[in-house]
Image (cartoon, rainbow, N blue to C red):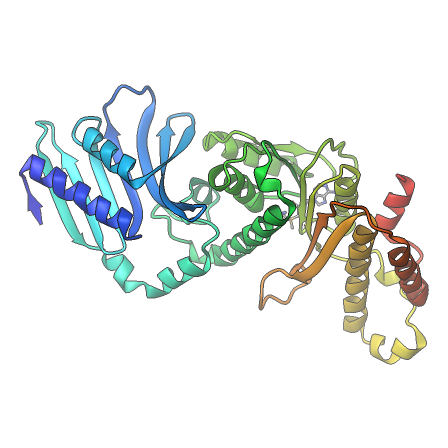
Length: 397
Ligand SMILES: C[S@@+](CC[C@H](N)C(=O)[O-])C[C@H]1O[C@@H](n2cnc3c(N)ncnc32)[C@H](O)[C@@H]1O
């Protein structure tokens, strides 16, 4: 449908927006061709959010060199649309689960309305299902596009679907831990991500804290490889993000100050021990690790006589070494004041990288003598001489 009665078309467009806002059908609203007074403002994109069970709209103001987010009620949003359309913005594009509607003002100020069914949405029930399953992260977040997880239409790029699943699961676990530890009420948080790599999870974490929890967190990614550090700092600058930076360094020598949340996901071998040690030393409230390769314990293992027939198979020995490395890490965290869980990170992905160690600092100290005895007993049983995290903790005691 294309018609030309300006006031009527603007009213239809706003009424359709209001309907989409109120019925949970909004996917995205984009206001562009800005001609108002705000210097450097290029466009505003609007998406639905839920804050403390209240349906709100998140307005992302995209300036040339930075982005600003403002959350608004539906009534305020409708009021602004009445004020802006045809005055400040000459183009508005609504995508709802049912409709795609474009309102354009030509040079003479005449409004043109184009409305058609959202076929993409009707055709892709699977996409909708996926969206519901992955509800922790919004597909339309700008960092996802900058990192190549989504395309220009905010759709997941098929080759990145595993990473997308991992990001969502990571935020889901972290959100739970932030809730239990009461960190959501803090005025500021300091986060360290050791072995940040290409920083998919670092950006996701920063976005979750800033955009959803509205906590002005300071996020630092620490990474050995300078080229990745440069790439990630450039991405943060392009997105005009505040409170995120990447530093070149080895976790072994990194001087950490006050850290509230320490994460180390897939940091190689004993880099995980150094990161956990750093987390414990700096009194982090949350320590979250997904260990990677496990090289230190395996050569030390002496198969106890009863287990020798099982551990004669290399694959079993590797699994046993992995379980012991991570099991001892969890017990050492318990002994140093943390409630600790070890669990599967992403279901149906059976790799050594699919394990999560989540430790949350106890509010009250607890007697650790029994755990220390358990650690000593397990080490003696398997003939383990040295566990990296234990040594680091002893050296710094
Ligand atoms: C497998 S990547 C994981 C990246 C990211 N954490 C993730 O899960 O997507 C591991 C990263 O850790 C970095 N790394 C390994 N040892 C490190 C160390 N001792 N200090 C800092 N970074 C380290 C590597 O360069 C690599 O980029």
